[in-house]
Amino acid sequence: MKIKEPKCKYKCAMLIDDNSLDNFINEKTLEANYFAKVIYTNTSATSALEFLKNISAADKNPNGIFPEVVFIDLNMPLLDGFQFIEQYKSKIEPSSKTPRLVILTSSVSVKDQHRAAALGKEIIFLHKPLTSSMLQSI
Image (cartoon, rainbow, N blue to C red; front, side):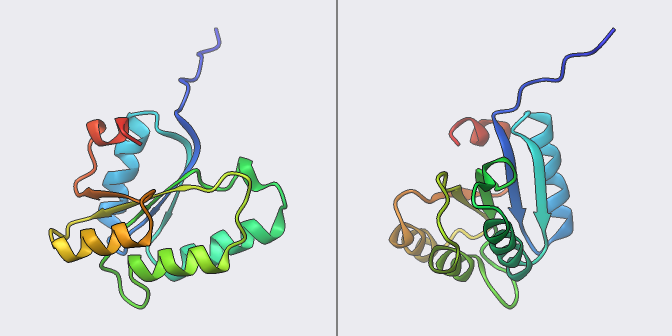
């Protein structure tokens, strides 16, 4: 007898956090809630940006493998979450389906919330830890 695989909300999502444990916990939360069939994890915003550029350049129709939702931590070395979003918006050719950008951070700074809002009203700002109820609004 073949077991039917549960339907996921999205085909693909990406987690970007320099803390491997946070990535692991968030990945398990996404899996437990059938949020995405494929989940990419990156411990560096720089490597995530390079990965997304390569996917975009390799295929003019990357909708099958390009993340539909990208969760981004703010406080990371070399390239922080805000810098990632700015570079993503300026360097990656928009596909027919632009991913939802979700800042997932432990920061409680009102300045960070205002800065996120200034980057675009489409950006979602969430506080760690990621929960099932948070995923309902994405």
